[in-house]
Image (cartoon, rainbow, N blue to C red; front, top):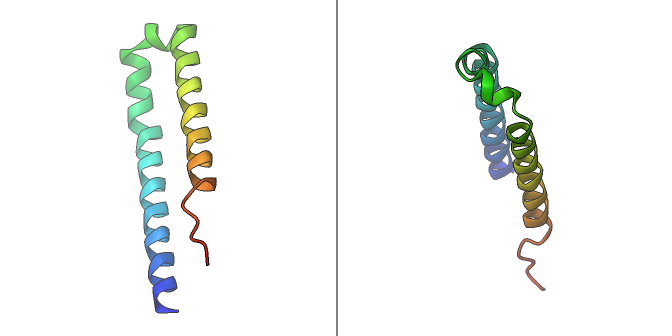
Length: 73
C-alpha cells in the first residue's frame, strides 16, 4: 500500500507542476509569442502543422499505452 501512496504523490506533484507550467505559459509565453510572431500565427499552414503534430502525438501515445508489454502468466 505504501508504494501506491508514493506513486499517487508523484503523479499529484507532476500534475501540480504541469498546472504551474500551463499558467506561466498562458500568462507570459503566449502573449509574448503573439507580439513577436504575429505573421507566423496567422499562417494557415502553421496552425495546421501544430494541430497535426498534436493529433499525432496523442494517437502515438494511445497506441503505445495499449500495445505495452503484456506479461503472460
